[in-house]
Length: 389
Picture 1 (cartoon, rainbow, N blue to C red):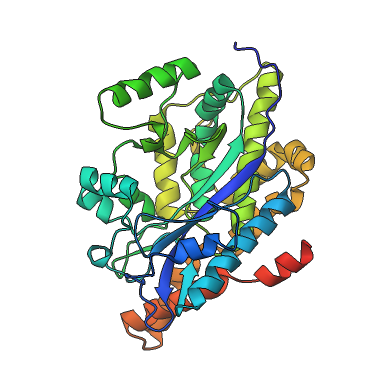
Picture 2 (picture 1 turned 135 degrees about the horizontal axis):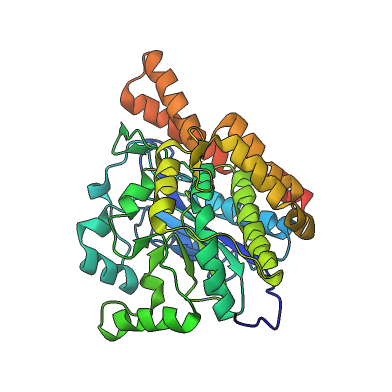
């Protein structure tokens, strides 16, 4: 086993993508001002707010954080900045992985070299990407350890997806899935569960085959659910939908951070999480995409579906030591609140069905969902920022 000479720092950060919507029509702002991200960046540190693939999208990235209050403050500040700047143009951000009624082929792409290359390579597969996600980085500075922990952490990806779902609608229809975003993203190459590697050197050899063949420029074009970041010495969680309620985002980020430390603890004690094939993990990935927290996931050890609340209680106990270490016990236990009230996808579908039953048209029901998402995306931000002063 590769010898680790220094414990990871486990610092962490979050990237979130938002859709920009018109406050009047509640449709996606297809021609949002191209300079909006630049205007936001004048208020924040450089690079924290940037354009995304479509002009109707914007991406934020928190500072590198050592504590949960730091993360909460950074995330709240960035959301508020985007909301304030968007408001000047009668727009608003929604932290939702799909829009309830927007049409993909009406969107305009951001004119940026990287995005132009992607659009040219992937054509309509890329142009359908009116989807947003949340990425969580946790620092694991040792390259080989990062690969080892990636191999083991894959097991928990369906659990984290299930907690985050916010994309039940696509092109004005209830898809019947809680995370339709994943169906769209799966159409891209180099997506899905990460491959398993025995070392960093083996990982690099595989990446270099694609780079040397001219298919990709670097490992940033590996869009797996979990990957070694191409920019930072971090293990980057990518499977999650973006959450409108900021406390849900912080809960998921905290759980992921604790999972990474728990797996490191096991390794220090000469133990490791049992390895399961991608074939089995894919089944739970699908169940999370289809049902979110409602129908349970498979416990591969006993070969049975276990209700999601039971799985989360086991996970809370498993991560207890790590939650104490990071002082995030309350954030980990917030998972119970997510289970009690449902994820964003459940709230969206419930509101839609209620509106239709009361006589609303499909468009009016979709507009009500957007109003809810606008409200939830900026809910309690001022209080959070005041409490963290």
